[in-house]
Length: 249
Image 1 (tube, helix red, strand yellow):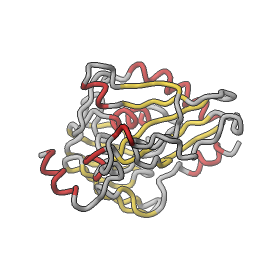
Image 2 (cartoon, rainbow, N blue to C red; image 1 turned 90 degrees about the horizontal axis):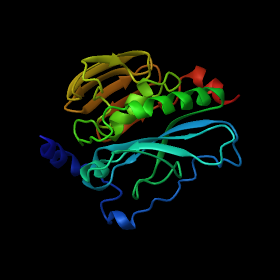
Image 3 (cartoon, rainbow, N blue to C red; image 1 turned 45 degrees about the vertical axis):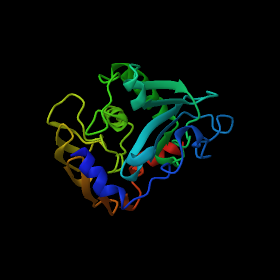
Image 4 (cartoon, helix red, strand yellow; image 1 turned 120 degrees about the horizontal axis):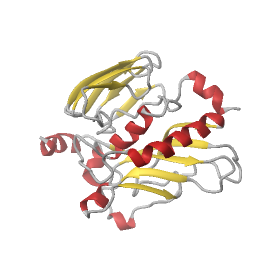
């Protein structure tokens, strides 16, 4: 089934990294994240970029970057599949450039919080990450993968109420293998059978249907439609208004 999905999708969306080998692909900064010398407040950012190779035609890779108040460096959190394939821990935490291109694909800022809200979120993230149960596991489809990890952090960090884009395949894989969970935004409910089929309904999530990890949905509050391969078409999924206020303090 996975190969069939790839075959059907590849012809309609191009992946930026298909034309070159991974060693030659750019990992340079996109210039999105503020320099620590210019922003002393704590920051939490969620990024996404088209995955490398053929999968980039229909899926994105996501990661989290944090900077504590007055810190001079960023810390990144992400799950990388090839590390697990070589028997290493898939979950990687390190000091790094937060807004790197993902092997040639442009990084896009999905959401961010700053200030005291970010300080609370960073403490929670630091507590959560060592408890992630799939640290040595990676499965492209339907999960657990890089998007499963980021979605799990979002669901368990109340300060992060953003939802990942619909083409973040793996986000619908519920980590504890239950059928029900709160939605990523924390304002609704999700039902999912191993990330293969299910639905999500919430104030900031709208209504989504997941069929074989392909998400179709509509956001009523911030008008947009959500489609496989293409992502979100319409208004941005950035933070709810009450979170935006906390960014300016």
